[in-house]
Length: 404
Image (cartoon, rainbow, N blue to C red):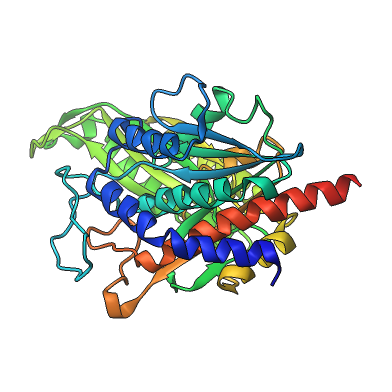
């Protein structure tokens, strides 16, 4: 282990209590996507206290901090998401000093973004102490609205990757599936590509006792639901994971004898290969429109979200080396969950995305993301901060070596 690694580890240990305070403070004030005003103010104040420059990109929520090192060189970006979820936190005793449940009714950090923020704030503290050893600069990107997959494009559109240009970008997400003390480093796709879709079946409503006078969109919708399940089983390579799920269906006004004119369905499709996502789109269009025609109805199909897979191969060796300096690297199973970090990848900037282990059965940290009982093991915080900080040094060295 070299001097840089030793210094990072020493400083993350020194700042563990500060990170724990940030984690507890942020856990108490979760806010929904694009409503993270209190969270934004908290982050801004902490960065200003560290003498981290706040860059003005016209962000309503979210923060971009900037640290210039002692020498000229590439700019490395570090991203953490900041929004919570509309989930009511289950009351429980954690035995953890200072831990307080969400103080915002009906909202909680059920996806652990508070651990991401606390880790990145910790990395900022470490890196400003190591400023003289940074031959380049660092951007700290605290991004809103990941949960609705719109925050990264919001940041990109406002220019956070420019002025100065970000040359490489790293992110992480906590993972309840792997234990604290480990870091997931995967070569290739880590999180799935996502298509969200909306289907509207239009028929002719009427009296439920006179079905022959109607074109029943509910019966048509039922046939669509059954048929789209064949896309994965019959149109996708069985060695390629994929999911198509109808998650919402709405039709009628609750009357027992009124057939509605319209049924609306919403759902999601997930896969890791671009050709599979293309096939899902094609088959869904064929099935929905064809089934509607067969039932005497019409159909409209929209894809309001198209999100690529998160994960890359280019920086795998770099990331494995960085993770191995602060924790035990593991090869995690790929997740069918999506991440709008993928939009940063789409810009062409070299990126890497880690999984940060938070599972600790002794502490009750066993519940999945988005559960009302979700709880992260705070022992992950210095590891997360260390990964962020070492990614900066490894990234700068990588860029310099490839340009030499």
